[in-house]
Image (cartoon, rainbow, N blue to C red):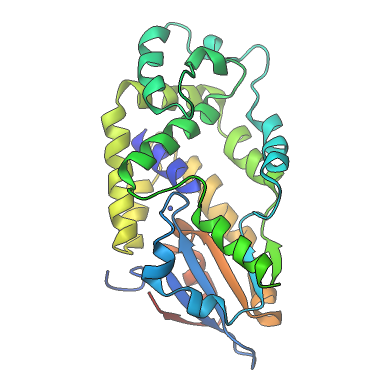
Length: 290
């Protein structure tokens, strides 16, 4: 379960090829370079200054991300809401039948996004929607300096708008909603939620390891922490590898046509199925910068 938590925490993430989170990408064509930045979605904004990333950001004409974060937050929430709602016959109390709901709620309130929120109030939601809330709360505890009002990915989009850069998304919110909430069976979602609430220290340990690995820019370590457990290997395929392949159908033309600053979750850069290796395989020259 803590491995599934690790993937969620990143959807909200020295030495060798996978020891960097910022790369220059040079095409075989005579075009200006683009840059790829691996984000931890719950990282403090101080990463911007520490990495010197804005020096490279300012050399580009376009900001590319997983989804368009210039969308009004309310509109984004409304786009995701239908995917987070459970069928009438599979609400939380139905899926958690046989569990001690009072005991689970006692843990939930420690990580709830708002004071006074109770697990029972989230009855219509799919378990993974609840797990995502808890994961964000836990990650804030182990990621000092994180401010929900200053998210790292959003910072690049907001700055891009101010600088009159083009904005481009690799996915729609609706596609992310489908991947996150519809493709994992509800029984597995419920199992993961129960395990997280019964064993919060395991989840916190995973969050600490991810935080430390990201600060060390060690993508290999992040990938190892985040690998799906053997019972449900399809989770990693759906949420990471398949999306990498989808993005690689778009990124070459994006890079060749417009010098772009590409910001995606750091795990999408890692490993032999990551976009760094995929770009190299297509003949691009990648230079690690940070």
